[in-house]
Image (tube, rainbow, N blue to C red; front, side, top):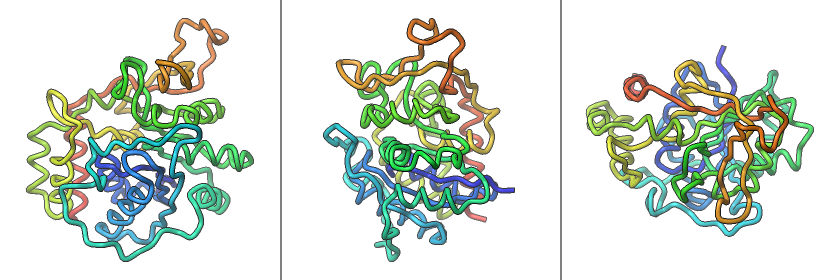
Length: 306
């Protein structure tokens, strides 16, 4: 039986790769994609979601546009990493489909209430839509099986010395989600920076049919470059959703810093200075086998062309 999921994203190159994998997995039933401002504006992330669904002939999956800005902070995008459009490197046709007439929060609310079973929500952008859902529809919490979130770090950041981009973009939203008392798995930089897509794997994409050609184009345009390759941050959430055994996790008491020079930090209180001993609220990804990730990702792309 396929796992029902909602994808809340800000495509974005690594989000695009995550969508590509998710909508081609027979064991995932993608009920809805909701877009949020993050890597680029919400208008662009919405349009990019539609582009990908049209590319993969999955226009049966609805798309809803969400929050244009963080709850309290000024919006600043990451176009310096993801390009002006959010998905450079491949010439997508103009979209012919449109997002839903309702916004992301109401779309998630409807899908949750129409489902015969609780739904996993996979979030790979700022968590603004998710926080608004929890604020506006707290009665929906029992309908959410779990949150699988790309974001955070317990070892250092990528937009400051302590903060990861998704949490930094809207720390107030992240704090609301992390205090929700729902099951949460945080797949952050502690995993994604140790699962780099190698140059060899990237070059292999080019020879893997239409899907590989598209992914090769956008990945080579990706400016998130590290020694050893490029992190496909958001793809790791899909891997965890289908095979959690591949990513090592540990439960922690995690708080989000919402002001000051450490804003956006996700602090694991492993010494229990601020929480009762034994309290945990987040299952944190702490390790992954990079070679296994590369093999798995290429297997997913090969399956897209069948």
